[in-house]
Image (tube, rainbow, N blue to C red; front, side, top):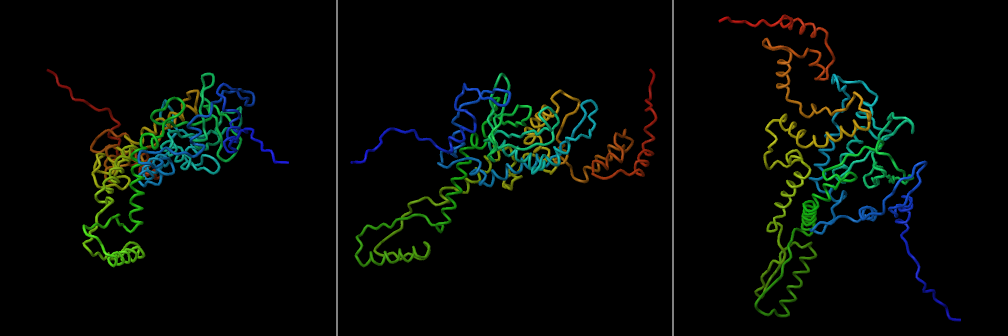
Length: 435
């Protein structure tokens, strides 16, 4: 009996895609509602951006190269710029102050913000992860860990991969659907439990990536130029050429030419090429000098630095002078004001909203003095004026100066400074003239 073939059409599905969609608990239906504990929240359909991220498809530039976090971080100027901004912010201390008196306050949250965010994450690595995610993906996400579901006390912070977070709106409130990259069960978090650092172009849910959106073409050109240079030098720094002549070569000349070409090829493209019969070389490809590969790469450094807001001289590009000032103090102040401040302000506002949602008298603020610190001579001159030099009214004592220099208090110096300032205790007498 002949074998009967079953030609019935059968649906075929991707196991990886199917498991991911199943993990989102029915996210393929925009109008569907999913029960999460006691709450029902609206979930989103599988968007093109999510599918692109899932399948690993990259944003391609006109140069034909993919531009994403992995490829762009291989460009030295991108890596240096992101590490500079993220490292500077991560190493900057966060102080807790009283809104009324602006005095420093001792609080349990200081340890989370400055020393240890959670198990496995120091405060530096936590902030560095969030800021680098913001620069690479457009948004930085972190989760606030609380002691219990009924407590508002924060006991830790952990970063979240930007591609694992899906913000959406439900009943006028922003919720965050999280699919952990470690395979843990998916969950939905309230906005009160998520630290969200957006970028330029924020629409209330997500922000476009500065790298793959604004810098796609310039970074793609930098990657293409880098790949071309690598292939050029890997091929012995030789250009393609042809041999031309107006006469017809004999069989003997062709045999000699073939032997010369084979000998040169076996030597890695190096060595003399014996030409006869009026043969002349003709260049086919453009060499690196004519293509101005070096100029293109130098231009890419400036463009990418402008994209990240990083002065080129701070990442090793010293061919041009900086407009941030001549001294280290002016350069540090310019870097804080024009580059870091646009990241520091929304970060502090987000922390104040999530740590103290009822508008308590406490607030956090980054201590930028460490980057704006002047040279030794300038600092000492400023301290002399603050302590009342040349009869000026003092507004600092020796202990305050020593505290700013990370030195312990010295009661003897405090007594001396107090004795020196007695001349200012008496009211200032103003001479009056009568007409």
